Length: 278
Length: 231
Image: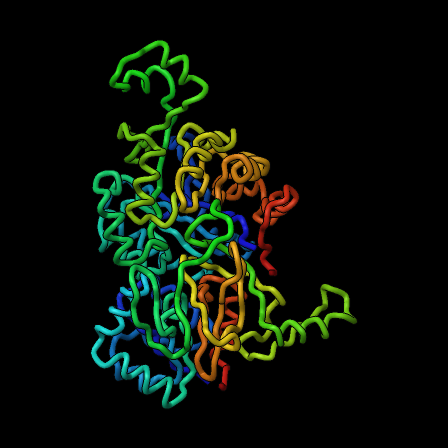
């Protein structure tokens, strides 16, 4: 039976693993190669490696780390951050990545998704979507018909809206997250990595409504991300959010829980999981 | 004894990832797009990611490559392993985006996964467990009946399945699968909204729909088995 994937995520800045809250206040969480090795040994199902180094000049550091990390792990490795061209994708694959995740560049030039999928296959192309809830006044103000107040009352509970942010969460694109998800899937993305910016680093759990809205709208698998603080949150992400995979960072990096504790929790909730000795 | 492996590079997917798994298992890997390296290698691995037609075109575009493969695998019986689309290419035909000819070493077609449940995600992506063919299963049951479950040994009839758990998890990413015409060519199956062929083997030819290079210990064990295989 296909199991629920549990994916630890390493946010890497200038060669170190860091973790922030709402994409800010970064805190050092260790050496990426060491962490990758530990997660491989614990039986993580995949590993995600996001480079959040601001400057593009430091790409060589990233390639070096991806290469060293890839030598240590024999599970699927997704690498993202600053991917702008088919050549960038190829370089990462040659460093040992199995999938490449793109975010800002896919929004800036959606054809990149198609080009990448055609050249390397959809299974290589992950589109990361950073979404923030805009339900309420702002979303309504965007409605062209301007039926203001009434719509606002209606929207409040029934029609939540989320918009896509890029550049590490600094820039709102105004795109609807669910629509964008459908579009990237149609362009050839093999998977969507969906992060709630409202929840990221808060430990309050996934934005389940967002996750479910996106997961139910596309045929490709959705990885839920942003906000995991307890093991129950992982279960909710699958059961209520309809995610195919759950991603978490700080609960694992800081040793709050191990991968196998998390899997045990998922299994106790009746979800299929794989343990490392199977 | 170090084995030399030719890993065919036709511009597709996670080559480095595949190469390092075979290196980890002790092989000397030559990543190559030259036909002459195929004739020199002791064993041949054909990876593959992307669409069937594109992969076959990519392979055929390498001068003399398909001929060299036919010669080494069919005539000289060198052990061959196809991974993912590299396994699908063994088929006579692939039906992804039109009908395309494959290498035709095994009879059968590559078809879209037929899912009984329309809510299942496509591609089939992640860790799923293998079911081994009839003879393998009977052997397993016979061995296990008198022992406690945690000591169950699984003695496979096929050397590629040596030292594996009885129903191991491996990592898949695909939307199409090979349906061999001869049931005997299927070495392992898997279920995703219905059963499909996950491993094939006939003579010196073998292949996996999943990615052994990404399947942690189980995958590395299979790669080890392939290196020791004397078909």
